[in-house]
Each structure stands twice: as structure tokens, then as C-alpha cells.
Length: 275
Image: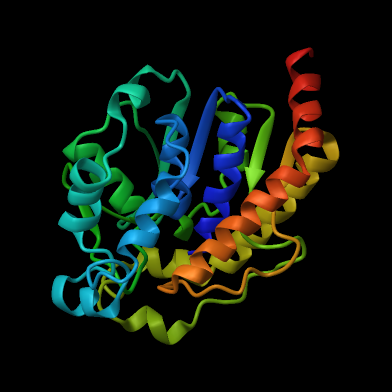
């Protein structure tokens, strides 16, 4: 739920008419970030507040009953297709390319999936990319199984630059100086992870990967290739927060940081357009 910070940031960017050629999202950065392509200001905040008390939405009840913290049908069909639908027409017409990061359960490697259309299959890519280990069942797509993209590539700036995007705005949900700690090795033996040796290996080194990627992001900022938007201090919100006031607080924190940095961001973009 630190992703509510991201929601606040991208809503401000959309309100300001800031347009990008491409975007790539990891975990909540994908499930919430797709609203940038469909240009739905406030949508992510709206449905998180409306359904945060539903037992199928981010609860251990859902894990026990359905095998996933976010129940498949409710979270990846009912909400985005019926209850608070993605604006598919706008999504299709927006030329911004949008990618989701997933982790291949067999290899432990990241997979970068471009999402051009919204349908039953592509919603499975979003679900796979946000399926946290331990509390989610791996998602099978075309005979392969996937889990959360953050396992293998938490901040895919280097990969996105290699894909042809030399200048990037990076939204982080941890403050500068944050260092991820080692994954609890006892968790590696739990159901859903123990059968995938390469997922276990990726989780063992995830803190190293994450901290190296964070360092790379700030190095790119120094070189003028990246503009970073991040909270000044830890957001202090639970992974499974259900308090509406807390969700609003973190969303507003994202809005505030984005608004405070707007002038610098616009200059960053303008300078690189003229290069």
C-alpha cells in the first residue's frame, strides 16, 4: 500500500498534462500505474477506499479461502471491468507504451510484458506481476508460472533504458538512503515458494538486487538521466493497510511531493526534449 504514494504522484502529473512515451510498473506500480495510460485521475484512490474493507481485497482471510491475498475474480475482473472499469477506449488510444514486470517461477528471471490491450489475458499479466510470494498462488500464463516482478527487478530503470528510454522519471516509495534487509530465510520453506528453487535464490539475493538498483537510480540522477520523486521519510503504512485515513494520508503525501517538485520536473522534461 506504499503504492498509494505513487497514485498521488501520477494523479498530479496527469492533472498537469505531463505525457510520457513509455512507462513500466512493478507490482502495485503496475496495477495502479496503468491508470496513467487510461488517464483516470483519482481512480486508484477511489477503488482502494471503496473496497479496502472487503474480505477479498488484501486480507489473510482471502489467502486462506482463495489462495491469494487479492482474490482473482473480484480484484482482476469485477473491479476493473464492472465496478470501477478501466477506460479501455482511452487506454487503447494513448500511444504511451506500458509494461508490467513479472518473475518467471522456473528461472527466477524477470519478464517484461508490454500491455497494449485490456482483456482477460492481459489482466492475468497484471495479477502475476503483483502476486506477492507466500501469500499468492503463482499465476499460470501460456504454460508458465509467474509471481511478483519485484522479486527479480524491483526498480527496472536499467532495463527500461536498454529498451530505448534514455531519460526517465522514477517514482520510489522509499526515501533516499533506504536499504532493504535480507529476506527471512524461514519464509522460503513455506507453500508456494519451496518448490521453486530459483524463486528462493532470487528472494535470498533480493536485498542485494534492490540496493544495487537504488544506487543505479541515484547515479543516473547525478548524470541527468533520471528525475526521482520519492518521499522524504518512510511512509509508515502497512502492506495490507485497510484504514481509509491512512490510505488517504499516503496518497496526499504523494500529491504533495509531486506538487512541490513540479517546476523542477517540467524543466527536466523540457531540457531533454530539446536535446
